[in-house]
Length: 102
Image 1 (cartoon, rainbow, N blue to C red):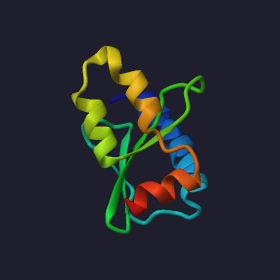
Image 2 (cartoon, rainbow, N blue to C red):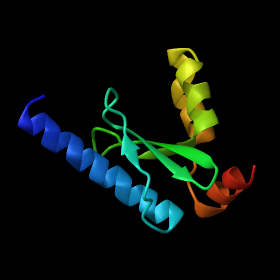
Image 3 (cartoon, rainbow, N blue to C red):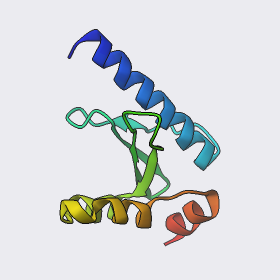
Image 4 (tube, rainbow, N blue to C red):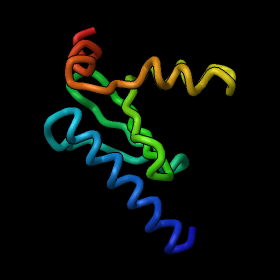
């Protein structure tokens, strides 16, 4: 990977990380980035795992999903993915609390 691609990925990750902090209210200690899918992060909160997707451009927002939601998105046909991402995306703290309590 070139340095410019690496820097671009780092900026995308930084933006997604800021979004995650805003959503969960603190800095997660367990955020790890997937070595193969470089803009896919995983964070453990209590007994739950969240998946953080960093978009490549500013036109899209970072996405936070439960592990189960991400698994459903990964397994669905490509044409349905955008809708499922919107359906499963955790967009606020009350939705996050409900997901963590489930």
